[in-house]
Length: 258
Length: 106
Image (cartoon, rainbow over all chains, first blue to last red; front, side, top):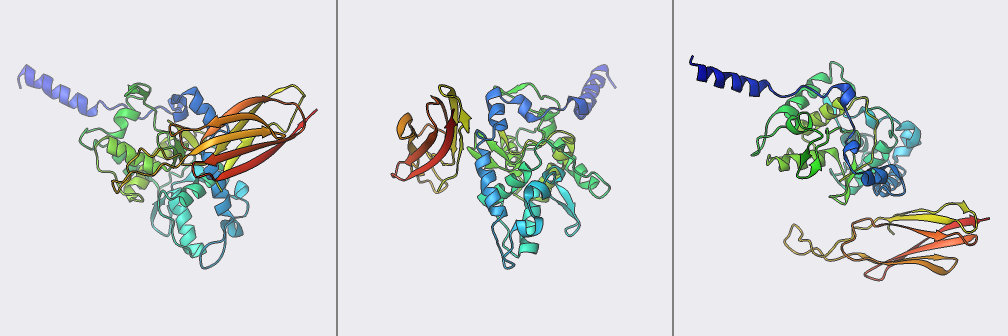
């Protein structure tokens, strides 16, 4: 092997393994650390955070009877302020019935279909986002604590594979921006660490509330990759990995992002 | 009726400058966007906001299509007497929503 070929070979090996490791636990920061002070203030003031309007809609829905059983969420779960405290911090979670994890939106729909005998709410519908935001609001300030036991591990690992895989016409992986280059700028905006502790979020660009799946699909279009459909198992695995990655960070739902 | 969030201090000293915050849910559709069918999405905005303090107008704003969805309007006034602050939002079709908040001034 000539010296030149050896150098090329070394460079190839080096670039393949060059990806930085996971962000060390003590260096992880919520995405709200990367937004402007104004946006952060808006998030933390319940009279200024526009997602609170949606949370109030969710409270109404929580108490509204639905389906063939004519039961409301309250009839079984009681006061969400108590019964739903910390719940959103533990999702996605393994659903024994399905043999795979579901996210909070899917869990709400499971309960609607099996317990209330009502129709599932479409992804990104006002109603589903409102219920999700209302439930997630009850976990504000609590640490993200998804399960990573033997049942969950294969799905978290599958999510990591998607996170680290280069995709789309730009041939980028999530990790290249959010693990290797966080804190730097992309098109003038800081690249955050992509911690999923604030969903559903009110995104100023959207001028409305949206789910983590919507945000992930946004990023995929940005990479010129074909986004997974709403509810796709791959998206849930990715959500699971992202929440596991954000473990211990305080929940901020509903967060405000630029 | 649209959902609105209003923050007015429950009590204040006479002469105090008080901050009032209002947030109302509204799409504030500009009329400049094209929908999925290729047709323009019709303009739909709130174009007028008034706050009265015991009947007297203390704040008035005219809104235009450049205002983002869910308008958040915050302003200051002087606490003069106990009573009611009334907030009214009127959309371009003339529909008005009124909400009130009470304040005690010592």
